[in-house]
Each structure stands twice: as C-alpha cells, then as structure tokens.
Length: 434
Image (cartoon, rainbow, N blue to C red; front, side, top):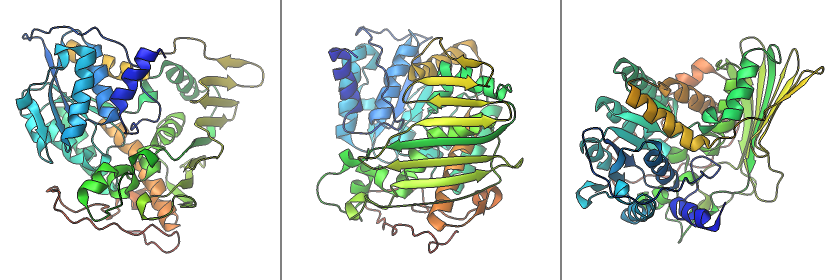
C-alpha cells in the first residue's frame, strides 16, 4: 500500500476497529463536482465509524452516478471525521449538506426520510434489527454489516424483515465480505460441488490480538450510556461478544463449507484469562465451540483475542475424498484429494469493493440480491456458540432460536440518560440459559 493510500485508510478507519477484521482497500477517486440528476442514486450512511466510512467510500466508487446524501451517528465528532475524509477522496460526491447530517438515536429515521435510495447500516450490532426493519419499511435498498443482531430475539426481527424485503424486491447485501472474494467463491464452490466428497469435519479459527484496546479512554464509567457506546465492542449487549461481532466471519465460512446447513446442537466453553478488570467490559477473550449437524458431521470453532499468542484465521475442511484449506491470513486456497491438488491462481479481488459493485449493479438492472436470511442465520450460529460458552450447557438449535434472552434494554427508545447496568461476566456452569 502506498504511503498516500495508507494515510487515507488510517483517516477513514480512525480509532475504530472495523467490523470486518481486515482493512479495506481504498480505490482512490479523483475529487469531482457532481450534478444531481434523475438517475443519481442517493446513499445514506447510518453509523460513521471505521467500517461505515469504508463502506461509504466503496459505495461511492461502485457507480459513476451516486452521491452520499445523508449521514447519521450518535456522535458529532465521529461524523465530521468521516465526512471530512470522504470529501477529501470524493469531492462533491460526498458533499453532504448540514441539513442532512443527523445526530442522535432517532437520526436513522431522518436519513430514511431524506430521499435516499440506498442505506448503509453500520452502527453497532445491537441496533441492526431496528434499523433493518425501518429501512425495509421505507423501501430502501440495503448494505447491512454483520452481525445483524446480538440475541435470538433480534435474529427473529431480522428474519421477518428479510422476508418482507424479498416480497418488496428490496436488495439486502450483507457484510460477510468473504462471500464476495473470488478465491473463496472458487474454493467453497468446489467443496459444495463435492470436490472433497461428503464434508465430515470443518475446523475454523479466528485467533487474533486484543483488537479492542484502542477503544479504551478515560476512566471507566460503566453505567454511563455514552461510555459504553463509544467502547461498544467491550459490552455483549452492544457487540454480542467477539465470537458474534468478529469471529462470525469464520463461522460463516464453516457454514459455507457445509452447504449452509444449520447445526442441530452445540456445546463449548470460553472465558476471560487476560481480559480482566472493569475497563474490559463483560466480554470473553476466548471461545471453543463444537457444532453438530444432522448427518453426524462436526464443526469445530476456536477464537481468541489475546496478545502474544499464536494467530490463525483459517477454515480447514475434511471430507470422504480429501481435504480443503482456506487460509485467510496467508491467502491460500487449496484442495487435496491425494491423487491431485487444486490451488486457486485466479483473480484476487477487493472483496469489500465487490460487495458494493454487485449491489449497485443489481439496482441498476432491476435485480434483487436477497442475503437477509443468510446473514441472519450465520449470525445466529455465532450467537448459539456464545450461549453454550456462557452457560457451559449443550443447546439445540431450536432451544437457541426460542431463547428469551435479551442482552440489552428491552426497548427501542434509547437515550443517553438510559441507565444500562452491566451484567457480570458469564461463568460457564453457573450462568443460566434463558
């Protein structure tokens, strides 16, 4: 990455860790003047952090006649940083007027009412069901970051919204970026076509460092809504814990390898070894989950956020005819059946940009991309993993889907005055399943 591109990336990502673990590539765009016409697609950005800003950048690159029309965030400083950097790259394509810059918990409504055609939903995961429902009701095409909820109640809301979106021919493109990566499309396509036979076992990892350290500032004020929201990855009611917010990428690829089958049950564990103290919220720093499928196949998941430990971001699949390796960190895509080996050597595209290219191309052609149900179910598999780790219990898919647990306030009427007590860190074998 050139120094100029690196500076641009750092500006857009700011202090936030992206919702996707790997940085997006910046496709530099010459700042231009933009004349609005009847064919101009207007984009609304809801959530102006690192991932939202990156997605807005890619949306503006995806179509020659698109503008950023409105923005929403809880914090003025975050919005202005995002807007300044997007204008530097895109000029008048990102010239959002002051009357279309909205702040507050109801700012998403104002974006939806501002005349936009497409919305980018990139707030913290806790708000995704509410925002997705509203966007579908308003008839807007949607780019929706993963995960789409933090608990089963939220997943049910998303599934219902996805059903309505399909009936209304509204496109929903998810933030499961690896589904748009050509090497992985080729590798998992071969797996699904039987290249390694019947898939028996999939082992997936997301082992990284303590990526959330950059969020901590000032002394913890755990009962303060703003402090929690600015440090959202550290609280399970906002992020779903890191197995849901981050490691869900690997879990989604496990699902992909199994042909998008759903597990029938899961068991596992997790905890906090180095992420201690109230400044670290109430999330775990490691998980180990075993998923069982109807045909007896097993999926094994391991994730951790601990400094100084071995890192891994990969999916290995074993079948009746051979083995497949998809290593995200090393960019290796290989299938070995003993007698012959296949290695991907084709295009290595910018998957973040491809997400938006395909969304805007579909809109222009009058086609519909319906990924709402898929992103909801993969998110739920990760939520199920958190459930079994927190409780130490074996939980079936039906039990997980019918869980009554609501991690955050049981209201959509959020305010900064809302007292949000932080639940204690889960203790496997003691914390009950609800």
